[in-house]
Image (cartoon, rainbow, N blue to C red; front, top):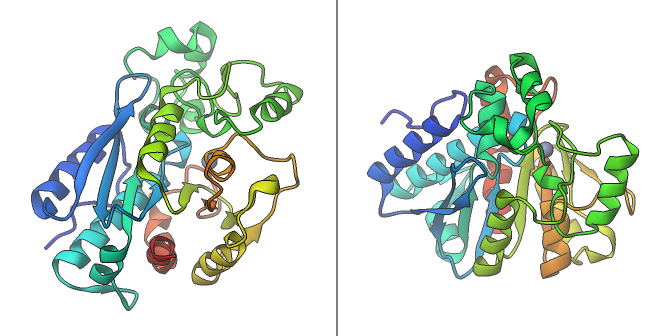
Length: 306
Ligand SMILES: [Zn+2]
């Protein structure tokens, strides 16, 4: 059977179509839900499969221009579903056995408006009202839009979580980011954005063993957060590193906060990771995807098994 998820820009309509087709092909093996709506009303999809008593969260598309992570999530979801349906292994690992013990909840795009802005420009309905005239005018440039990281209000979702948010706000202010921006703005208060709240609420319902947030780029794995890092995080990170060849990184005590990984570790005392996939220019060109996927496939399976 031909693949459903092609190596194409994962804008909202395309992702929606892929999810519907995966549902038609493998509907008995997973469930699709929406964990909330983006600022501009796009659904934030979640695909859940396996033993949901013991789930792991994979989250892509947190930053708009890092939409290669949305494609990574969709491509991997199809790989897993196809392996289950056909009783195939992935990287010599028995996927049915794995998913009878572990659940996997995949959010391909936590920030679907940001992904849309980066791929398709500023033609998103309603954007002007949220962004204000100046920033919206700049968004008329496709070059400018392609580098967009934030949501449709110019808030960086990965600086909007309630984990030393004040510190991150001070860092943003010091670097001149004092309001809505394509990247780096914390928002007016923690969890001010619907996209942030959607994943916060998902985490309160799902009781995740651990969380993996996918970003690009740098070929790096971030695994600690201040004094909140669980004892087992380092070993888990080393396994992720060994299977991908990506380097482990430890930011200084106050270098990073207010991200999903930081918040999850502080709130749930459980491991969380940020994996920066790929290297080179951002957005990462689709021509790199096959190489990138082949390199990360084993890590993606192991990351669910840990
Ligand atoms: Zn990012």
